[in-house]
Amino acid sequence: MSSEASAGKTETTQGAASRVEDVLLGGTVFFKVQETVFEVNRRRLTNYSDIFADMFHLPQINDERNAIDMEGGSKENPIYLEGYEAADFAALIVVLYPSLEDMISGSYPLTKEEWVGVLNLSTRWQMKKTRDLAIAELSSLLLTPLEKVTLAQAHKVAIWLKEGVNEMVEQEETLKPDELEAYIGLRTALRLMWIRDQLSKSSSSLQITLGSLSCPNGHAVFKEPRTCHACSASILSDDEEAVYVAQGSSGTYTNSPNGIELQLSLHSLRCNHCTKCPFYVPPFAGTSTCPLCAASIPNTSFRLLTPAFPSSRLEKTRADLVEEMFQEQMASYESWDQ
Image (tube, rainbow, N blue to C red; front, side, top):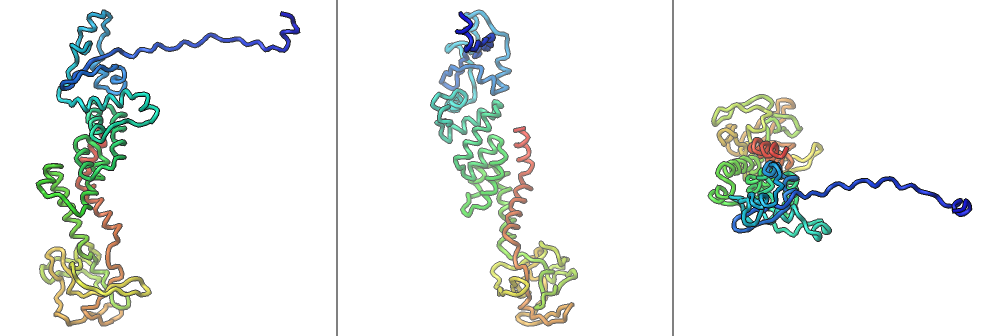
């Protein structure tokens, strides 16, 4: 080639091509679940499950005849998986070995029941990534509160237990005690009923403190501890659990410079210890005197500047009660996922 012909041409030097790694799929293994035989590639199972990794951690048999004769080496000599459902295993195979259409769409053609099967096997066989996927897919299917609790108990899913119990507590229509026991077990049913009972006590009645009762000028009337007239229990002025306003009691709301006020009668107060009126108040008569300004207060017209705990407090109470009752159980589920 002349120097003129090569002057405008750039020469390139191609380096040695990098070696492509061997593609070893690990061989085929046969399983029998109930009456169904499954032929699958073992590599995906060992990659996603320590249980299967240990199962197949055996010396490789080079002799083809011996490999076929070993357990799992042929359809005639499969590995039997006792205590499992064929439908669950089939659903798991769909997730572990997706079709081209599944990979393109980014979704799997599985029903709720099939995803529960995937969750069951991935939990039992310690397949964390597959388990996380099953939990995410089922969560997107809008599980009922009862489904969340039952699935949480069966498969150790902390978030479902927390959500499900909170939602069941809020439900207006609830199952009968026998039905609750059948679905979620006696212990969980009793805890759920206890939480509802505690919330009904706090939300069905107006809960106040003795120190929040004031005169028309906004001064606290009861600053010192008192003794219940009916049961002699000690009532502290700032004890939020000591007294409450009986359900069905009437009061008058008014606007004032200090906010919304509620005028109520001492007759409507109840002691939390005995559920009776803690004051000796003659019916429809009597007055009290403000210790600060000496204002005379009709016993039927005390004022309350903060008439009820805000709804956020009731929500916190519900969450706190659920946490209190189920904290240990939720923690054990969370530790399983670590």
